[in-house]
View 1 (cartoon, one colour):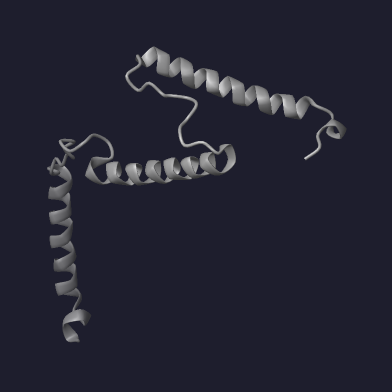
View 2 (cartoon, helix red, strand yellow):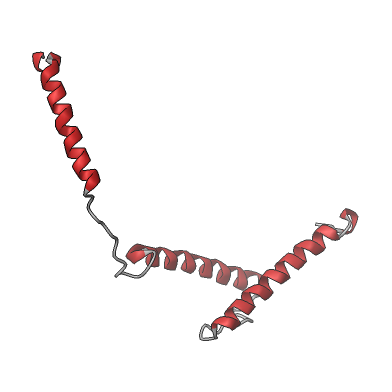
Length: 114
């Protein structure tokens, strides 16, 4: 216990730590993450996204079979379409959803019967 009570040894240890920290501050190590795997998510994000997409597809398929009594989809999505067509499709979908919500909000409360 006298080692911890001796102020001279404690001061020397503090000085050594300060010198080491100052050298590590002056000359830091350059560390970079390499994205050789698959981009932003790496190798772990793709299986997780595939799992959630699969769960969503299964839920939609089940609801479609229960509610509409049909196995196939009425809307086919062409994934080979150009980027402009995909962006335009997303914009049209957003406009339809926002328009529907705005129509429900604009209607008087007495005309909505849920």
